[in-house]
Image (cartoon, rainbow, N blue to C red; front, side):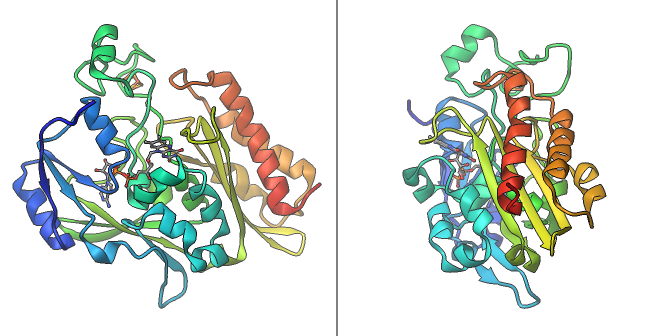
Length: 329
Ligand SMILES: Cc1cc2nc3c(=O)[nH]c(=O)nc-3n(C[C@H](O)[C@H](O)[C@H](O)COP(=O)(O)OP(=O)(O)OC[C@H]3O[C@@H](n4cnc5c(N)ncnc54)[C@H](O)[C@@H]3O)c2cc1C
Ligand code: SF4
C-alpha cells in the first residue's frame, strides 16, 4: 500500500506548527510517530493535503519530569520506548509502565508517541480496511458514506476508542495540556473524550496536545493495567482495564477504575467506586465493583471478539486486577 500525496511540514516550535495549521484551512493532520495516522492514510481513510510533523518540536519529547508544585509530566511527543525506559517512570508510575509496555510491539513503540496514543483514531471492523474492501461493503459515515453499518438505525458512529494508556491516566486523575489558536488550556483526561466515534474528543481543530500531567498521589497508589487481546504479541485491546488504588491501612482512601475498547471513549466509573471510599477492601467489595462496572459496559459487534464475551471479561479482568493491586487472595 502506498501513501496518498500530501505536503509535509516540519516546524520547530508549537507556535510555528500553529501558524502552518492556520494556513492550511482545516486540510491537515498533526503527525506524531505516524504508526496510526499513516496506515490510515494508506487505507485512504480521511487523508488530508497537509501533514504537520511535530517530531522537531524538541520541548514536547521529554519522557518524564517532576512538576515544581508536585506531580509529574510526560511529554506528548515522547516515544513510548523512552517512557518505558525512564527511571522516573519506573520508580513512580509503574502502572503507566504496565499499560505502555503492552501497546503494539517494541518496534512500533520505538516510533509511537504518547500523544498519538491518546489521540488515536477510533476503530471498527468496517473502518480499518483498505479502500476496495470498504467500497465492496458500501462506505460508512466515518469515511465517504452516510450510514453506520454496525447500528444502522442510529446517527452516531460506534467505532471504539482502543488506546491502552488513556484508561490508566484517567484512573490516576491525569490532565492534558492543549495548546491552540486561543492559547493553552488544561483538561481532565476523564472529560476529554467524546461519545461519538467520529468526533472522538474535545480537541479543537488546530489544537496540539503538548503534555500530560499526573498528580503526585500516583506515586503512592497501586496502579496497573490488564488487557484482553487476540494475540499478545501486538494486537490492539478488545478490552482493557486500568485501575488506581490507594489504601489507608486496610481501608480504601481512593479507588478509580477505567475501561477501554468497549465504547467510543474510555470509561471511568466514579458512581461505582466512590461509595466504597473508607470501607475495608475485601473480596466481596471487589466483586461488587467488578459487577457494577461490567453491568455498565455495552460493547457492540465491531471488533474481533463478540460483545457478550468482552462484557464478561470486563468483570473478570477488573476482579483480577483489583485483587492483584490490593493483595487480596
Ligand atoms: C501493528 C500495530 C499494533 C498496534 N497496537 C496498538 C495497541 O496494542 N494499543 C494501542 O493503544 N495502540 C496500538 N497501535 C496504534 C499506535 O501504534 C499507537 O497507539 C501509537 O501510540 C500512536 O502514536 P503515534 O505517535 O504513532 O500516533 P500518530 O499516528 O502520529 O497520530 C495518531 C493521531 O494523533 C494525532 N496526534 C498525534 N500527536 C498529536 C499531538 N501532539 N497533538 C495533536 N494531535 C496529535 C494525529 O493527528 C493522529 O490523528 C498499533 C499500531 C500498529 C501499527
Ligand atoms: S461504527 Fe458505524 S459509522 Fe462507525 S466506523 Fe463502524 S460502521 Fe462506520
